[in-house]
Image (cartoon, rainbow, N blue to C red; front, side, top):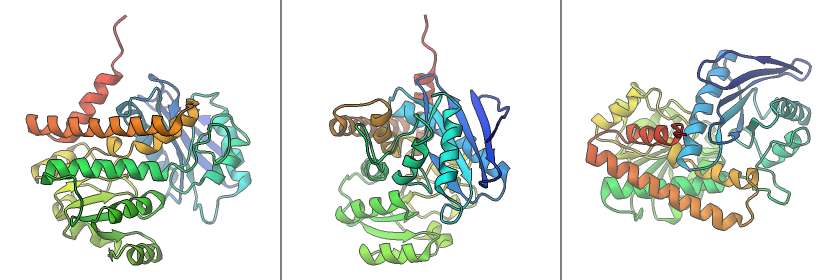
Length: 349
């Protein structure tokens, strides 16, 4: 295993890990440990090149700092990425080697499940490191965070509906969901049970068809989702999808979803604001998963009650952000970042 330190301004620690014999290459980025050890999942994707993977790790790690702070968790922000197709390249040996890379940071970074990963994968990783959460078994095991992530997004959608349409009842509203993986599929069930009409898409056409049949939804091609007419758009796939190309196409009243780093740039929040599209900041909307994972890292005894309380507090935080944004006539993203920056500001001695 080769581990190389990478210079990255404004990050506490960034490393490249590599095991050529196993075909393992990836990055761990620790953005901040100001509030506690950096926590954030590991994702495995077939990135086009190493620079793309590194940039994703950096952006996601920063996002985790904001997400953990917004949820008022005693955790900092970090993230890991592995380059490869999880359906083809993932193996127990590769996962165990990644666990060694995590262990080399001596607790500065805690890993967990993210895109392309499962609780079973966390067990392989955990055989080589003490700093893994999202395990299926164990005294404080938190398991798959996807259902809790979806619940938090569902709550954020209801808050957005209240601010945009004057109602928390989703019955009859049309909601488009992009990305039907673990989180997106769970979200579709919650939305369907609440009476919403669904428009769905996924890069896997078979998954789109399955979800459409299960929830009487309309399935569309991935590149068509931005132009469909819906009340609320819930992006639950990759980041950067709200940009100067896609935003002019949007026919939604609000955006509230689970994808990390939905805005391609901070300026895109202003573009949404100018178009009258209410944006529920992603690092608040999708905080349910890390709340669930935190119970394992922090060894919380009364897990269900603790998670419920934190989810309620996160919902109230979203409401305060959208309320303040309306009063100040600014983008909710601007308000959310301002609040988190205040939480991260060093306290006077």
